[in-house]
Amino acid sequence: MTDDDPMAGQPTPAALRALPSRTLSLVAMQADRMVSEGLARLDARKWHYAALVALREGGPVSQAELSRRTGIYRSDLVAVINELAERGHVERSPDPADRRRNVVRLTGKGREHLARLQEVVVSLQDELLAPLTPAEREQFSDFLTRVHEHHARR
Amino acid sequence: MTDDDPMAGQPTPAALRALPSRTLSLVAMQADRMVSEGLARLDARKWHYAALVALREGGPVSQAELSRRTGIYRSDLVAVINELAERGHVERSPDPADRRRNVVRLTGKGREHLARLQEVVVSLQDELLAPLTPAEREQFSDFLTRVHEHHARR
DNA sequence: AACTACCGTTAGTGTCACAAACGTTAGTCA
DNA sequence: TGACTAACGTTTGTGACACTAACGGTAGTT
Image (tube, rainbow over all chains, first blue to last red; front, side, top):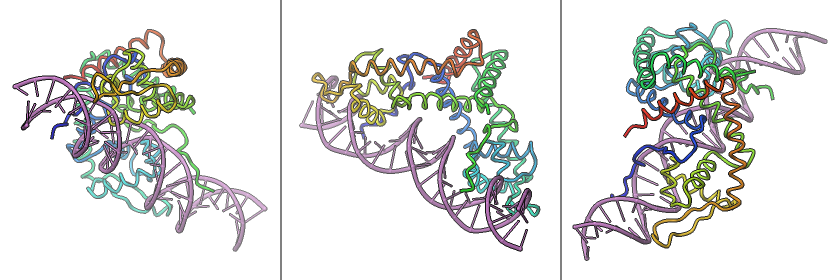
């Protein structure tokens, strides 16, 4: 074994003119990694969190509706719901009122689980934004939201 | 053909508490898509652009060095250089001074191509940050850079 | 001469956003 | 009633990406 180099050092030095789009995706990668690792420690993934939150805020819904609320494609949602159901965090049952639909609902266990996840995720936001002052964090979030909404047109 | 729904409408409604990490990755996705589409129109991909810029700023270098400067893994860089060489934007030749290395250099054609790419990419930055004032854009970039550098520790 | 370390390259991993199609079920309207 | 359209959950597949591991070759150091 001689070649081990895990690409040491930071992956992105000066060379490229720091385009916002580039820095942005770099930072997003860092954030994604932090969150994913944090959730993985609790045997969860990003989509689990997103789905659970959406269920808590919106009550029991069909999978299609859940898909719209979370932005998870309905094809991918299948696996997410499977995993959450396996762990007993969610229940999937046919909707008697519309037999095309499944109703997905949060279980008590799921609610507790979500509380733990949320704790982790929220504290990771702090870690992520550590170099910014509270006022700056607010501004930063505001910028992000405005940019996002601007391009989420239609 | 009856089921066609490309997930119409924006992918992310209110339901989830707008965590910065989430909005961030959403916006990064939008930005990535914009840039990728813009470059695709010129038969290029993100990595092509990154490599070309690094070559222009840093002169002819080995692939390993290019990998370090761009953050492209040296395993993936092989294909990028292949593609750029096919198109005549770059030349790859063995380094007589160190026979482990290849020297990669920008061609005249590559330089012209890069100029066109840059035009597109730069104007897309404007489009991306459209909802922000010039002062806000500066701040936004500053925030991103600070956060990025903070987590690119070591 | 032995050892370590770097080089370019190939191959493969897992994840992600996304598309396409299928069988099923509902709603609408002739 | 029957034909048509559309929404549902699901399966399967794709292309891009970040990343790992290992290879044979070469260089530098001891």
